[in-house]
Image 1: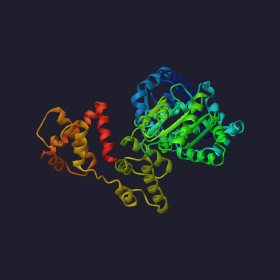
Image 2: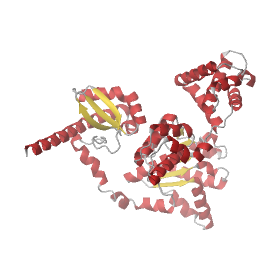
Image 3: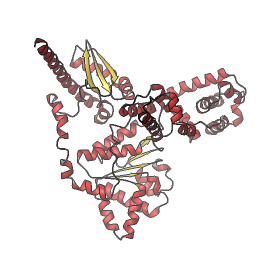
Image 4: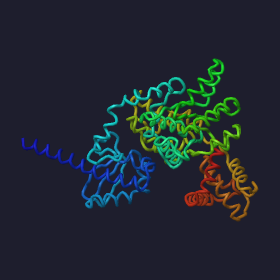
Length: 485
């Protein structure tokens, strides 16, 4: 009996410590919001959960390795200072990736509620979940009559944030929190195929509908055109216009589809103006920036560029690893790190294809009860991997680099050492190493029979310059995209 009481006391003490930590953490979060702003807090710090305290160190958890590294680099010292000010006994903060299914962490603090009521108030909004639907029947009507359904998988919580997409993510968050904010209407998202534009648009819609504050219509540009044509045929264009212009947030995906469709462009232009003039939010996505969509009318292109334009860049290796880690963790299947790294190296252009490859691996493991190995990966995904084999030639790389820096092609193999020639030559060697399977001696021979150590030096030097000079890194990345496309 005594042992039972002691066990009960230990549990009660642990729960009491969690409650106290939750109070302290809530206060720290309020200070962080005041310092960094609501958008930055929600983007980077909101997902932190509080772990245990051991001696003078407290552990904080984040859901992905990328977020952990980012928070550690940007806010690690500040978190330590705030915790020490709040609890002098805590002198160090350790940031770790949360273990899947871990129940030891205190939920993240959010909102300006009194600290003692944090747990109750986090749970409270979820209890009357059906209420917003009953209060806003117009939302269901708009979504069923006009718009495509939102994919429940595409939320802000499932979007993996990295350097290539952090700005677009922050802009999308801002619109979801405060639609029609000055400077954010319209929000124009652009980038290549499979980089997350549609995911962010669905996430905006899901967040707004969850809050129950506004009506949302999401559709592709193609569906917008077909709805418009159907309205013309049925002589119900006025009804179509009234329905579309009655929504609070209109989201049009893949706007480039309207290029060459002049009548549909004109209707969209008038709808755009009507909604913006009425203080409603517009969110648009395309594969290029407004200024590069040459087939659109000038007046429409100008209006699209007058709000917030956010580019989603090609993924980096680190972001692809973070995406794969998040997907593998959610699946419950153990995928070795070397397999994730292999996929991140091989499939670089399209996140959808990257996720599809991982899904195929996981399905194969579940169906046959076999572990995921590098050998199995190469066997199961042989068709995808074959399609992604690098086919770029060194000659093509030399030609593109020479054109980019406006030097002669013969300079790639000449003995000239002037920086205006030597630097592009080093970039070409770097890209040859990255984009072809040629060995260092083979690359050296293509550049005027240079030694393989010269190629190694070029690769090292270009890597250093890319880390030091963002403009130079952008040039190299642009060349890589051009060569891989």
